[in-house]
Image (cartoon, rainbow, N blue to C red; front, side, top):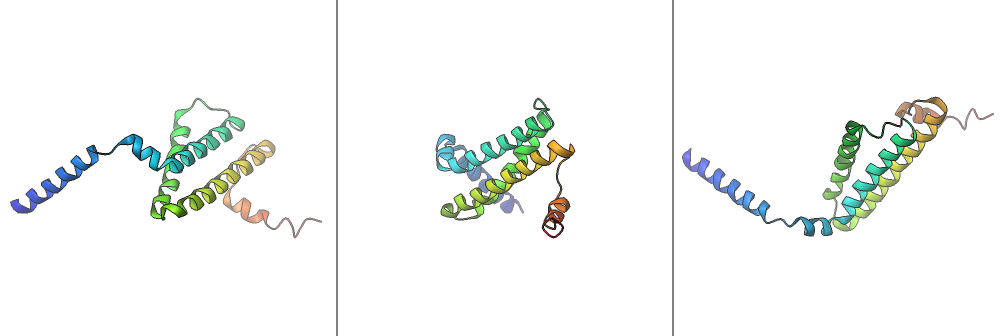
Length: 129
């Protein structure tokens, strides 16, 4: 039991020492695409809030936006580095489209769109007459 505890302790000490060796500037330079995506998509959420609701001085929505964007962009680390740009581009286009749709819908109805509303909007072509 004591031997297992010591081996776990040694393993954790090695991991902590390796974390101290990480160079932040080098990490940012190697992952610049990730950081640009997070910043630009968070800015899209900020602009949507500015145009629609107007409470740009609230910190909670900003933290929520950054958190959601970080979680969605973190999945890009599961793909090969050459495919990350495709994933982040698709994610960026999708989230920007959501922001534009919400902005246009909010100007007319003073509420935001939902998934069910977008799903039923595909039937507009059938009842267009």
